[in-house]
Amino acid sequence: MALEEIKARIAKAEAESGRKQGAAHVVAVSKLQPLDRIEAVLKGGHRLFGENRVQEAAGKWPKFKERYPDAELHLVGPLQTNKARQAMELFQAVHSVDRIKIARRLAGLAQERGDCPEIFVQVNTGEEPQKSGVAPLEADRFIAEVRSLDLPLAGLMCIPPQDEEPALHFGLLASIAKRNGIGNLSMGMSGDFESAIRLGATHVRIGTAIFGSRGT
Ligand SMILES: *Cc1c(COP(=O)(O)O)cnc(C)c1O
Image (cartoon, rainbow, N blue to C red; front, side):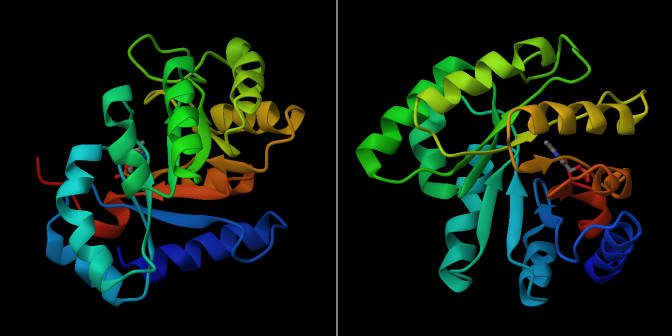
């Protein structure tokens, strides 16, 4: 599916739910995609991309950024403390902050560098043991801790369980954001982005629907 078609569907979902046109940004998730497909999307004028591994992003994005200096890159996958420094050099936002250890590490590096990517706290809305993210009941406390570290907290992120109605999870994430006064919601992927937009998504993370199926 072409990005143009996805953007048209996004505009329709925004209009139907009474949201402003352009309220939802497309993070084109380019993990494991051939370079020529990424290049084609860059050539088409899109500038916001997502990767889920620091190492993989470090391998391909510095070259793209030389040619497309206004490209913006968001980390949507887990971050380990030993990759935090590298992540800060590559990414303009981190969607997956979910442990105080990594929050402290990012805060320390932010002090040192004088700037910091935008921070999204990942919430494990389905409370799945194998999934990253803070538990919904821990979210308020964790958000307060992140704020106390002076990190630029921009939003919340979730990845709903495979076999459940995603709207329930989008709604839960939106309610946690609302009661904490948080403006951005990173939710919705290739299969469910319209539902996410109706529930307030500001960042939809779309991979396969833009680029086609991933190599492994
Ligand atoms: C891969 C990935 C996506 C994109 O998934 P698609 O189903 O290909 O749209 C979104 N979010 C995260 C965290 C991912 O790892």
